[in-house]
Length: 504
Length: 77
Image (cartoon, rainbow over all chains, first blue to last red; front, top):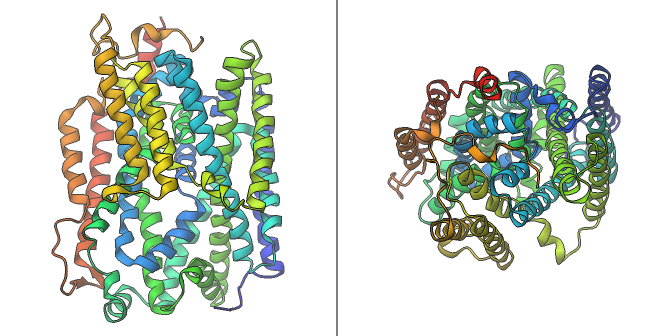
């Protein structure tokens, strides 16, 4: 489908520059206001553990919702119809999973100066094998996640500007901006830019919904249309569809909650009150984001009933352009949406990169290579390795290697294998390090093998299979080899003996 | 000190909501009933999602209190 995009040509380039400069500006201001930001890991990676409710909320928001939520999920809703409604509850499930571990994780983080999730595992299990394996899994998943965001930035920029800004130029421009503000202010810059990015996205998506209803017709029209032309898109999922539905709730709920960058945000909270308020707000966001995006995809059906799968991927771009051409208010609103989508991708990427660097700084370099190094030095090493990895991922984003490409697809499936150690480890004193390690390793291998072979026995996702094997080994092994500590587990809330800081 | 995970009743509530969040209990086949253009089953799933959000809000408000600041200060003494 060819049509004139409202943001092709000069206006597209100006919008990109404008958003980029705002982000950079936020980085510079943050740096000037916090000149000791590079003095300690806490300051740089956790914003000095001082994020208040609003900023904390937006940084959780930006980490959880990427540009893909808007672009990809509306296209998906357009293609499969109401079966894709599962996107609303699965985002709520993430908050439910947080409730199972965040309260205690926050307290422990504050008490023992935990900076990364691996720090916590090291403190709990005191096992080099567990810590290193978990660090590798997290770095691997984060790297792949970052790669996905880079590709999304390039496609987003070139797609939304109708190709005026080429894929490569878009990627390079925003990566440089992102690294620059990240280096300047660390977590604070990331969180403040997340706030600006989140607001732009929310306003933009909401205006897109209003524009869609005004110019393409509302839900009754869409419902009648679908009933006539594709009644299957209205039906209840059954059989395999139901298994898929519940798998999504589990895999996304647990997987997204244990993203290391998500966990780090728990440590960044200023106090428990800020954390509780942010979570409460997050519990309602799926209706305003995933829900709105879902209905935009459904409403699009009336206006563009015959898009192919590839064309439907550009649904949001096509709709935004049409709406922007109506009048000046919508033009401005669509600029916000447009920048918001790109900004949402950048803001997901920046938090991934920061967490990646933190694991390098604290868990690899700081724990095994040079434990004597100053925090400033550790931060420096984390930054440099981060840039090297970004450069490497850029090479892949440029020319995806045909057959190897699959190994860059694994993310949630493999990351979820650290969840038992992180969550169960918090509460089960009997947890046995050797079994935790074996479960994590076998679970990751099963998940990877099933993914590559395209196996989904009984319709259950590869990541969920890996998780089940993982938990069985963890629990079984701990029951056989684990020791119950002398004092009652209920008493040792703050993990009793493990009170000394994380050193080997 | 209150931690949501310690309270089994809370998790039974979550389990009940989780079961209702998967649309296994609707009749399949035949014409889907539309209300204002939206299938009835989808409306119920959206309502159940709201129940989950509401329940999470309730649990955070009334069952999560680990005495943040004072507690930390006390422990450090």
